[in-house]
Amino acid sequence: MYPDRFDSSTLSTEDNNILTEFNTRRAIVGRYIRQHKIQLFTCPSCAFPTLYDKGIFEVCSICDWEDDGQDDEDADEIFDGPNGKLSLTEYRVATGYMLRTLCHQEKGALVEEPVYILTIIKQHEARMDAFHEEHSMNVDDDHPVWQAWKKEKMKLRLNLIRKENQLLS
Ligand SMILES: [Zn+2]
Image 1 (tube, protein in one colour):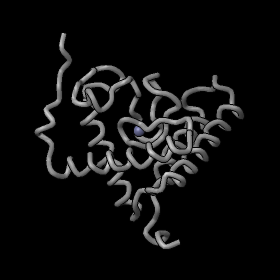
Image 2 (cartoon, rainbow, N blue to C red):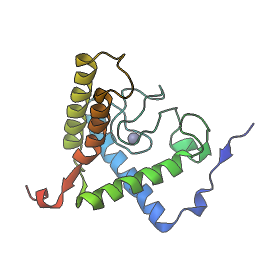
Image 3 (cartoon, rainbow, N blue to C red):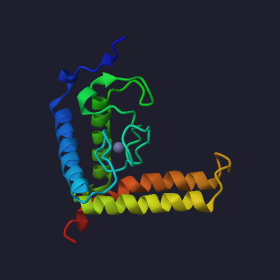
C-alpha cells in the first residue's frame, strides 16, 4: 500500500514563504545546536529545538507535532498516524500561519537568535518539570493543576515572541 500524498504544487506563494521561513529557522537553529553539541533536535514541523531524540513519538511543546519519524525526504506523504490526515508539509504550513497569527495578535516577531530560543525553551521545561514534581500525576483531568499546566504550555509560544517595543532592548 502506497501512502496518500499531498500535492505540494497546490501551495500558494504565501504558503511557500512560510516554508522558506521554516527552512531558514531550521538551518540557523540546527547549525547552532550542532556547533555547541547540544543534545536537542529541531522539530520537523516548527523548526524549534524541542525534541530530545528523533522519531521517538515526542510531542513538540510548541506546535504539537508528534515526531513519528517523518521528515524532509517524505514530507508530502500522509502517514495517517498520530498527526492525522495531514502531511508534514501541510502541518508545517499550518504551524507557520498559527505562529504568524500569534505574532500579529501580540504585535511582535518570533525570536530568531538560537541562544535566546534555547533559553526560553529551557525555562519552560524547568517550569513543566516542577509541575510533575509538585503534583501527583493521578489528579483528575479537570483539576486546576491541569488548567495551569495547559496555560504554561501556551505561555511558551508567547515567550518566543518579542514585542515590537522590546526589539531595541
Ligand atoms: Zn514543533
